[in-house]
Structures are given as C-alpha cells and as structure tokens.
Image (cartoon, rainbow, N blue to C red):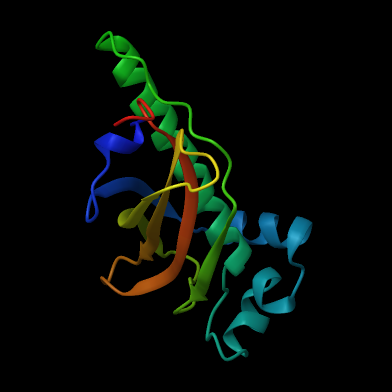
Length: 160
C-alpha cells in the first residue's frame, strides 16, 4: 500500500471483477438479506427488478473483498521489490452510497476506485486523509454501484 505522498488526485485502481450467480446471490440473501427477489427467481421476475437480484449489501461486500485483496496484492508486490508498504489506518466512514441499477443473476461487475481528494489531517498530521470514489460497472458498461470512501493513510514523514 502506498504512503499519502505517493497518491494523486485522479489516480485509479482496478480492483477486479465478480460474477453474481443464482447460487451466490441466494446464499448471501439467506444469511443477510432474505427478501423474496433475492431468494427466488420467480419472485425476482415479478418484482420491479425483472429477475433474481443481488442484494445491494452483497454488491458492497464483494467490493470490500476486492479492495482488501488489492491492498494485500499491492503490499506483497512492494515487499517483493524490497520496499516497505504503508499500513493504512481505519476508515472514518463513507458517503453517497448508491445502488444505481439492479445487479441480476449472471451479471459480472468490475470494480474500480478513483482518488477524488487528498488532505492532511489537522488533528493528526502524521496521517493524510484520502477520499476515493468506488464504482461498480456491469458487463454492458453501466454503472451499478458507487460510494465515496474515506481512509486514513500514513504520511512518509510529517515534514513531507
């Protein structure tokens, strides 16, 4: 993971893709969001979604999984190159969560993240604050999911 000084507004990270199948949609729904249109094809077809729909929370969970996996991948690559990766801090939250279009069984969503703003923390100058727009796009190029994430990122040095 990069240090605050290594991040630029507009920087993009490709996080990966995930295909939502009837089986994984139903398994998630049974455990976390047991609404009929997430559990049954017929109920999904008869809903305003027009098909078996993934829970928005399922889509968000997949995005989080891919974000974490990408961070681990980047940290491993840095270590392999003899560099020390930054250990990011917690997230103080997110804003503007939007489920823009239904994710239906068979859809493959590709996730990415674009840095929108950077600032140094006033209370903890050893940390920077990064805001990034996370977006999911289906196989037709349609945006289906979006949120603005905030993360604390360590600075390489406070004087930097």
